[in-house]
Image 1 (cartoon, rainbow, N blue to C red):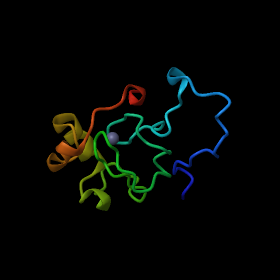
Image 2: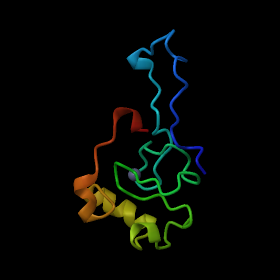
Image 3: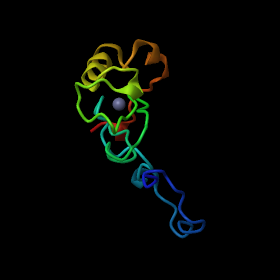
Length: 109
Ligand SMILES: [Zn+2]
């Protein structure tokens, strides 16, 4: 369950070759958010337990696979309602709009 958490590389492993900025691999944000679709997830949605998407603020709910089933993690809204709210408001709930951020260039699929 911890395998999606970012772990720093061992000290010294990269000293020989400092990464060029344009080749830097994003540390997380390689899997699509089930709600907004941007590549914000550090792991597939089946594994990213309770990860909150920074772009739409959907909290990943691994226990509610059905997009029309109310999600406890998201105060009872369904994934489809979250998607609709994100399209309309820019976040899954109106009170969360102020917390979201724009997707980074590398998060745009
Ligand atoms: Zn999202």
